Length: 280
Image 1 (cartoon, one colour):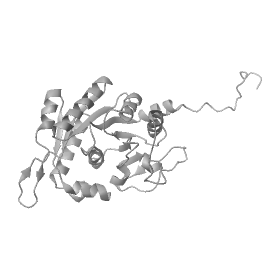
Image 2 (spheres, one colour; image 1 turned 90 degrees about the vertical axis):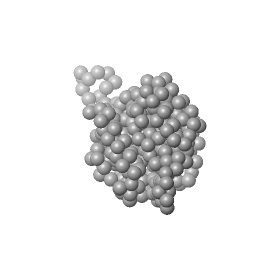
Image 3 (cartoon, one colour; image 1 turned 45 degrees about the vertical axis):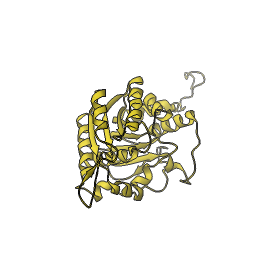
Image 4 (cartoon, helix red, strand yellow; image 1 turned 135 degrees about the horizontal axis):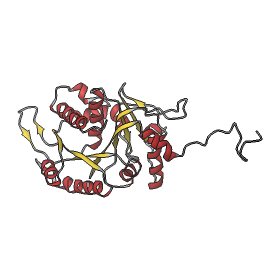
């Protein structure tokens, strides 16, 4: 004990890592981080996040789904997950388990009353997202899919600041007002130096179940034209299917219920695009 430096005992424990260090350690075990963005609400961004995560998990990849929509978290309900996250022996939170290959984290899974409003300013949201990264036992993942709220506010900015190698997929519908907002999302990614993997056009058409006629409810070709103008890849065009809404509301996997549907086939194609663009 005589030779020990003053103020430090031989049995003293090393200092606990800071929240930023914990987040960095977690991120080193995650190969691909992909943020799903939209310029406006109502374009089906969360549905795309959930179904893309399921499609990748079905291909055998280890996938985490992180819901950073602090004010309107939908992911647990869409996956049919109930209950709350709990701490494990490592004093970290275990994510909610959907399947052997897919787990999820959301602020809703930390709230005893799921209908409580979360009224937080930017710094609190930043801290929560940092905890979702560093204080959750994600383990080794091939993909972390990050479902962000619409727009270019605190949550996507926090993701860009904390995860410097995150890439983006932007979801839109064909109508012009949605495309105008997508252009803002594209400019956001350019400003924060975030690579864009491509665009997904949702609700691109609707096929009448009675007559078989295809109707472009929200217009046609807008996502494809915008992708071409912006020099981006159009990853897929998802037709509108009312069963997607029903499955999301019921917390049932659309892709399992309708494995041969055009929507499921497009999600498989999008997952294949992402696999080809993956970082090993």
